[in-house]
Image 1 (cartoon, rainbow, N blue to C red):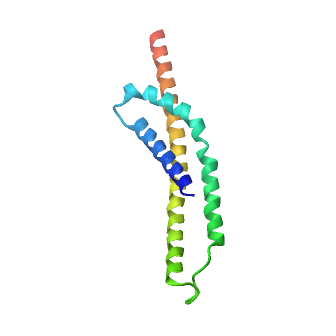
Image 2 (tube, rainbow, N blue to C red):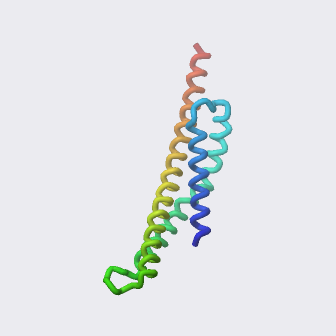
Length: 131
């Protein structure tokens, strides 16, 4: 299952980099190309959403089937350590899922806003040239 988390972390990283490049000031010359690349990548990157839901279901299933080590002599120290390590990994993976979903939503919203701003600025320029 480690490969799924690597893929999700790369997807979240790519979303974060694209979001950073779109929102950095001073890149107006590159912004039009970045917007077109980002808009073309938004639809394939939508597959992150069901993928995150699948991984969230996997985390839920692991928590449901995880043996409990709450009693005093129920688990050995190594089993208790493995249980704690599994819980920590699940928390880390939950944060990764949340960040991937938030980055996708932000990227979608920011790209839509940039496209709308460009469209409105073109309309303003047309109106100025008419007058």
